Image 1 (tube, rainbow, N blue to C red):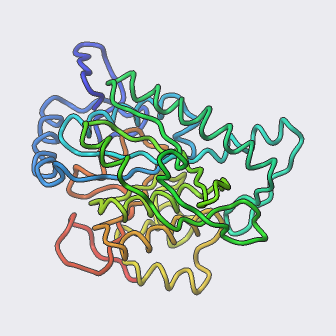
Image 2 (cartoon, rainbow, N blue to C red):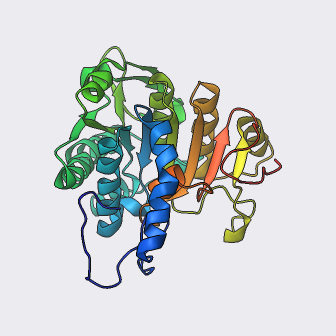
Length: 321
């Protein structure tokens, strides 16, 4: 599904949107059927904003990063308006370890003192953001990297004094983002925000993606994770919840059925769909072209979250809470 890819006669390669890493390329007739299946979704999503949170294993695997970058260019070229929000937790942790600092997490959030904040800014804005922009622009000169501090896109305040300079989003100024989208560009946002006095904060990328999606009145917000989606049993990949609602997820949080790094993702999904985003999606970022497989196939491949429980979508049987 790479934009501009024409590899006839080159033998087995990674498949189309629904194929995983190392799977054989489907026969020409199967690929044609897939394109036909995509058509109504392309028409449905044309002109719609799609916020995609990029992180986890997909960010540190060069092949997955390249596939993701190509997918974002393809979305833009067929008329969708992707906005990329990225984290950089592994990269921050790696640099902290090299500097002799130990990371501490509480409910999936990194405790951030002043030195850790400086490290996070260097990594997110100066390294990770530039790498993602460069990867996308290999496939088409469309990506523009910004920080949440630029144009005061993200205004933040301290989330919890015990977490230090970890921010909570208080406002998203969409002016800069809307101008970039109007020019046909792909904004790539690193998640450093600031308060009205200029104090910077490191903000969880899942939280930022949900807030940006709500502010832009996005059609969808997509989270790439290191699991297949929301699992009923974290030790059983076959327990994937295909579809659920904000109320059901809130119940899971209250009863402690969500833990660790999934907590901010689930909180962000709930906030986004209750804030007007049509649906949120949890996908396995370790699978090449997983975003395309979710958006443009009838069955989808991950977990879809909506504010209510409408019938007749995707062909998935609705899951109980």
